[in-house]
Image (cartoon, rainbow, N blue to C red; front, side, top):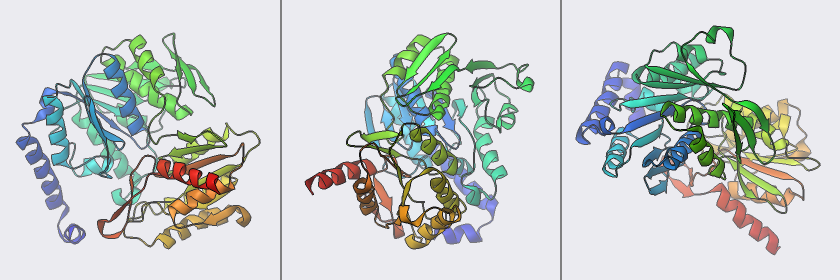
Length: 430
């Protein structure tokens, strides 16, 4: 019914509908964002991680904090997994969440903001104190009808946020975000600043002496060294975003350092599920850019072993263009590949795998090291059975999600991490 109405109703009517719901959600919850500092985090990759890092820093600094991301919903000490399968939930949910955060005495709410949520006005009637930009790459291109519209949607958050903007100065789209006026701008970078940025009135957080190791990352800010247990250069950027937000809100670097160095990992984000007899990682990566970064980061940990990759692609008509691209990236980085089901929604699972396979075959990947296994549990079990000592298995696409989405809104419980542990136990019994 919703799809039918979208096709027949004029766009202004649909936009008014979304805006009206946002206003109503805020109204019945007494416009809660006026009584709490809301920090919105947007971008293609890294949003959930940055929300998590900011939350931990604020708590370390003595604040009561609420956070809303694709990982979890948290209000002060109470939290639960995000089982809605929506990164940015509906307007009534968000406004009620903010009202509950106010009632619990939270000073801050850190919220993950998506482009699709912005298009549907879910960000409207939320008084954002700060907006954070992580990065921008190809995603949701079909639903937005082009990259320019996707970027334009992200920019809307910054146009609605008048106080503080925190920006990744190394992203190639940075000029668009810098052009939006606000009271205070903070930028973070690992590279030397471009000439046209040096004269801007912007406070810079520059990560220096950056090193990426197999056990974590190291960098320094203003002479303060950071030694984090997070993997990959992209997590240095995520950390610098959180550092910049903290500095913008008057938190000392020492408090930031304490909070970040205590973090053992992010749920479902480069999460190591097994360390013996071989390593197994689970990650949320489902965009080409994220997948490539995850692969390249983990491969640095390999010396003589094989790199075994399990992945799929979501259905529901989402970014079909990227399916063969994901296959090509896997073929260029993995020693053994198993493609499998992810979240097919209303699409034919076999057709999704067929599209992924075209990218693998075009890259001339050896058929002897490639398998199609539709059942995700069976695919994970097969990867574990193939792995030997010193090998590394990476399972991507779902992270810490708790279900697989099928036709007609049906879901089946499924957590990659739990399945890995269960299938490893089964393997030991054989």
